Amino acid sequence: NKQAVGGQIALRPPGSSNGHVGGAGDLPPTQWHIDGMGQGKHSPFSLLVGVTLSPATESNMGNFCVFPGSHTQLLPVLKDQVLAGSSLFSSETNGMKPGFWGFQVMAEPGDVVFVHQKLAHRGGPNASHGIRYQVYFRLRHVNHEAYVTDGSLLDDLWVEFEGLRDLTTATTAPAKAIVIPDTVSQEALEQIQKSGSPLAAELYLKRVVATV
Image (cartoon, rainbow, N blue to C red; front, side, top):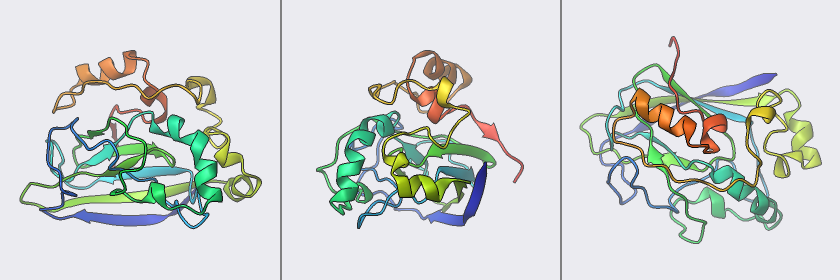
């Protein structure tokens, strides 16, 4: 029950760092954003799908970065931000935002990430010699506009994810920090899954290999 909004080719050239280069799990805790927040707007889509087009198999190669569990913590304050017409959650540089632990996702060409629209994320630093290429698709539930209009998307993270509702933890579950090695091995993926982190359901880190 999802409709594609369109594709975005995202290039991250060498030298892109936002002032920070570090290890895979060493990101500034407030340096993140949520897509489509600002001027009273919110929830422009349901699901972000990112397809890796160039290798990001080590830290600081322009990797996609996520802040696990952040959407469960941010949901209670999103409505206030929307009513105030605030663009706070759209700014990566504003240090007044809540801080979360985040990490750089290691990916091969063809790997795919599925990301809840309200999960805090960012583009990672690129200290490599090559441009990072990624294509993003933004999908909308068939009833998306109705849920925006009636405010459901500011009250319920899973109203558009009927198949995931029974698999997720409560929306008030705390964000949980997990130590991730620089290379995301199968053993590390299993460690994340067993940890009980909200990440296991809403941003399942296990690689989904797509034919691109």
